[in-house]
Image 1 (cartoon, rainbow over the protein chains, first blue to last red):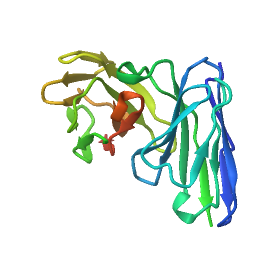
Image 2 (cartoon, helix red, strand yellow):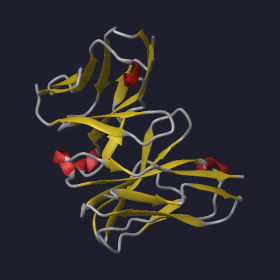
Image 3 (tube, each protein chain N blue to C red):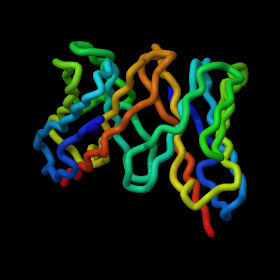
Image 4 (cartoon, helix red, strand yellow):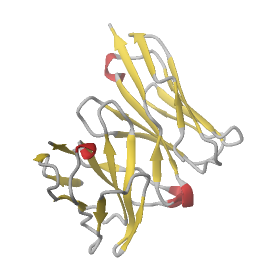
Length: 115
Length: 110
């Protein structure tokens, strides 16, 4: 089973460039999340989605955009990349949300460097 | 608002015990625990859904004190494989999203 698949695994961007991190899950989960993790730090929520067509901001949404046109896909768009966006990005999905949030299944991560 | 974990780091010898705490300034509906090895994605350990609930995973167990708005993770007779960073996660504002604490780095030495 594939689970949560992220692409690319590694990417180097120049300041001001844009790119999209792809995330796909094959578990039919309604809830999906994007987190970023700076070196030696914890996980910060960027955006999340409770189902196709519904997205909302997390703790650190500035500089990012998301869309959720299908249950399977939850791409993260970086506009005008800045050095502060150098981080490891994790996509995750869950079968349930809210107070009864189920186990989060994480992708392997995408390591982004902005120079 | 993210939960707060303590301590930030722990160094143990193999076979010793450890306790990692997770507390919140807001009411907790549930608490998640995850472990992350260096360079890898976080891996799910357990969820505690009810106040007072305790669960176990191998020699790792956890408790959830709803009134105190905190959870504790207990690692008994630690093994080298328990090394990593442990995160607690709680439903954030609106309860639709999961936010994580800053993590506790656990190092187990032979």
